[in-house]
Structure formats: C-alpha cells, structure tokens
Length: 339
Image 1 (cartoon, one colour):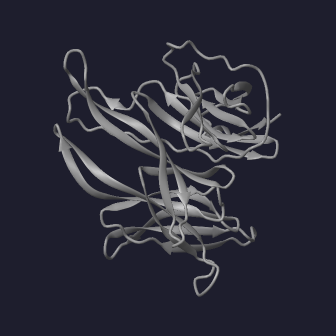
Image 2 (spheres, rainbow, N blue to C red):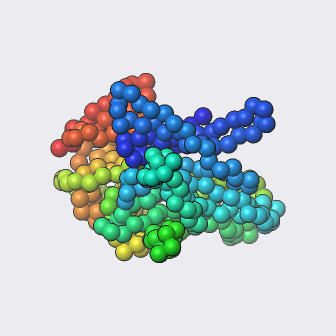
C-alpha cells in the first residue's frame, strides 16, 4: 500500500509505502523509486527505512528549493498526559532530506542528510525568495474554553510555523523557527504557496469539539498540490459580506519569514479546496461546480479570471504549457485554457 509520492532527481518518482513480513508479522516502511530517465524502460528499486519503535512515517514532501531531493517526514511518541479525562500524546516531529549518493558503492542510491526536529509536521519546503531556504510546518494547539453557562469545551486550533533552513559547517542541516500563526477558532482547510506568497483556505466553522470534556476528537490539516510561477490579469474578485459564514481567502507575504497579511476576505463559497498555483493563478475547486481561477499577480488584490464547470468532483489538476487539465473521476479529464 503506497502512502505518498514525490518528484525525485533524474526524472524519478518516489513513493512512501509499507512492507510486511508474514513470518514475524511486523510491518515497516520503504521508499520505492521509479526511475524514468529512459521512459521506455522504467527501472524500479526499493529502499527500506529504519524501524521506529514508538512512531511512524507520515509523508514525502518535495524540496522546491532544490528538486534533486525530497524530505521524508516522521514522528515519535515521547509521552502522554491526561487533562480533564482527555489523553494527549506528546509527539516529536522530524523531517530528513534525501539526495542521490554520487560516489562509492552506494552511488545512485538515496542518502539521508540527517534528521531535523520540527515544530509540527512538515508541509512545504521551498525558497520564498532566491537564496532563502524555508519550511512551513503545521501543528495543533489544544485548550479548553468556557461558555456563558460555564460549559467547558475543547478547542483545537491549527498553527502554521515558518522556519529558516541552514547547513552549519559540520554539515548537518538545522531549521530555525522564525514565526508562528495560530488560527484561533478557525478551520484551516488547506493552503498552497507560490514564491513569497502563502494562500490559506479558512473554512467556515473551526477545529474543536463543543461538548463534554473527555470525548475523543481529532483534526488533520489537508495537503495540496505543487506550485510554479508566471503572469496573468483581470476583473475584480467580489468579496462576500463580512458576516457571511463562508470560506475565507487569506494571503500572506512570507518573504521576511513572517506572516505579513496581504489579504483577508470571505469568498462566498463553502467547502472550496485549493488545488494549486500556476503562472500567478490560484486554482480553486468549488464543491460540485468546477474549477475557478483567480489572478494573484498582485497578491494583495486578487481578481477573478476564469471558471470551468466540471461534472463530478475535481480531484487533481496538472499544468502543461498554456493549459490546465482537471481530473474529475468517472467524468474524465477537463481542459482549461490559460489565457
């Protein structure tokens, strides 16, 4: 069973998957590489990952700052605490970058560069500005609140963290926390990046459980598509009324590795999903309707550009030249010209 896919060096696809030993009844993890250097004769190889006694592997994250490698994310459980009858597990998150070894018996194989301890799970690794390697991680802040009647409820807020990546003289990479943003009482659906802009989709509602303390709850931040860059234009994006219970589009300038707000408005949608960015356009899947393109050439003033109605649910979008191709399940693939 495969878990995740990342683009690797030399036109390779890398998958994070499971192994299973039927004799010992023990599962593990592996990297499966499909080398497409010769598309007519793809080569498949596998590499086992070290077993984790009290943890597991989560995902692969492409390194947009240096596409010759990628990150493997994992976490270990280091303890637990009980608060008002609710059990919380203390988790330590890591990411490790892998690249192709260039010499010795292991030449061509994936080689780890050393683990980086992170505040939360790695979601993006890219260069917001030339020469600046950065990471974006996500974690959850949990706490209790009381309403006017004294009823206690748990809240689970999403927190995004920006980190600067550096490689000291000793060679092992490190990450320095530069800024955090907690979305109090808001539901962060998904997000995408393009250059120094971070686009966050804040859904109506929030992470939280409104009920007796001690009930089991959980929340997960969704992950989304890759990014690129280019240019575009057009007509004004009309914001919904400020009190509308709709999704919100929040755009941050992260060039200083800080969450500098450029735009924050309701969109008049509900259940929308960010699918990716391409040539300064943000592509949004409108639930049950189709694909909406927004010109974000000026991130502080996004404007609507185009809409493609699709049947079914648009699950993925890919960009080739001046066209976007939208996969829509049983209804096939739709093409949107990018003017």
